[in-house]
Image (cartoon, rainbow, N blue to C red; front, side):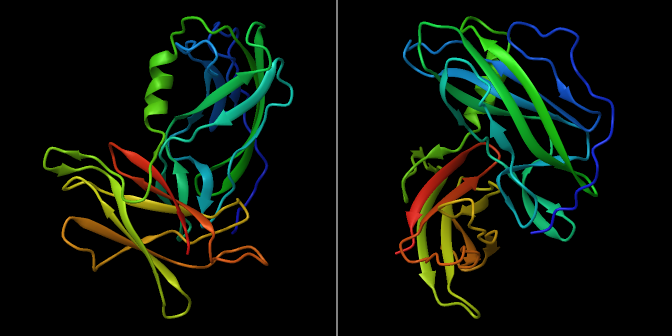
Length: 281
């Protein structure tokens, strides 16, 4: 993987005063980020809802949790928070992006990454503090870092509809082969996964079902972030009504084995996204 880093320059962009449900913007003219708050869940013991909103200048992009052929994923540090036991970052469905002759995975427009915040004590106030390191790219890639905080009161918020829309784009976790049929129209599903010999190394064939005419993409991740599986490519040979993808078994870290490894497959269309765990038996 290659990431060309140059010094980040530009004027910092911060709001003069944050509303109760957003933190100030932190960043420059190419990108900025802030925290937003969602309404409290109906179940009092459920985690609080929040999000990291990243604003990108037109022509720039940032990366998903697995960046693909190049790039670096965002890094989150919530250590400065108060009354926070755990924070889970959720990832809306990404897209495949061309970059310097390679393909990366990420977002080429403004994005909200939903958060699930578990308090230490549900009865006490929560102060969420974040330090976010991420990369943004146009022709070159530059590092970006923001530090901001927001009190999560858990009341009504003007950001709730936008946060809910981002949550709806987080891939649903389903089993291999699972997928409902909407009348006679098949829903998005990973129907089969087959491992076979390849020209240079073993490869995996994945057949995906989707509504007719839907544009489908597929991403594959290893058990840990040290794995660097190739991006699946569309190939011929699928049965009618299915789309086939292939990726070679490459990119395992030293000492790791493919046999039995837990792989995550994320299938994405314009209107749906699923995440399917499989073991490479």
